[in-house]
Image (cartoon, rainbow, N blue to C red; front, side, top):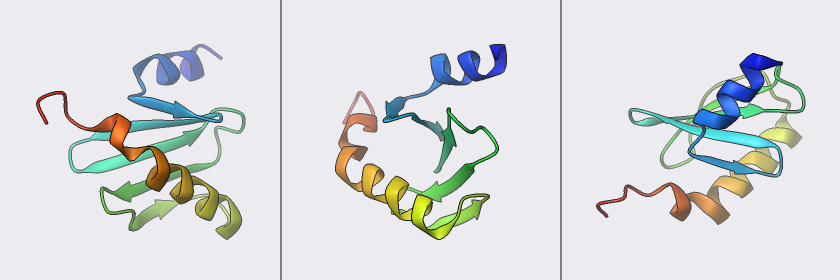
Length: 76
C-alpha cells in the first residue's frame, strides 16, 4: 500500500484512478486500483508496453488525449 501512495504522490497527473508519470520521453500509467495493470506510452499515445487489456488501453488513451495538456512542461 505504501508503494501505491508513493507512486500516486509522484505522479504528474491522476485521472480517474490512473497515475500518469513522465519518464523522459515516455509516459508510465498505473491503475492505482489494480496495480498489476500498467501501460507505457509515447507522448503521441503509441503503446510501448502493457499488461492491460484492449478495452482498458482505449480508456487510458482517451484520458491521455483529453488531459495531456495538464502534463505539459511548466516552461511551455
